Image (cartoon, rainbow, N blue to C red; front, side, top):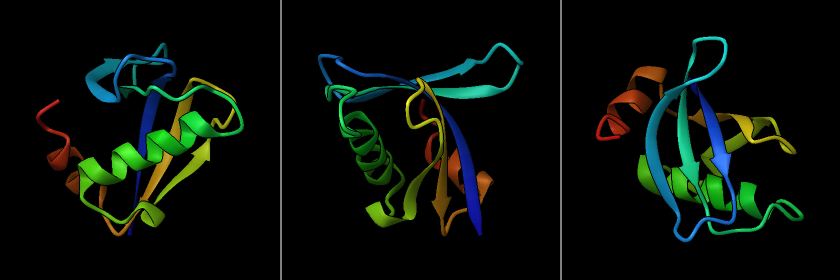
Length: 93
């Protein structure tokens, strides 16, 4: 079981935080996330996966970048959770 989560990442923020849900240009929901890390040598991507793992209460190894390594729009895969479980755990945003 693997969930997929669309992310809009903003690096160089003043705090690591999940800002909430938005809609991408194609009308799909995306989770807006800010991280302090620089977009250099995968630092921002690593900060993103660590933040999501903590929020979703799963091991960091279960959160993987599937697409968008060099882009602000990313697709994250979360092993061990269904799409519904991910939505439930992120419902407060």
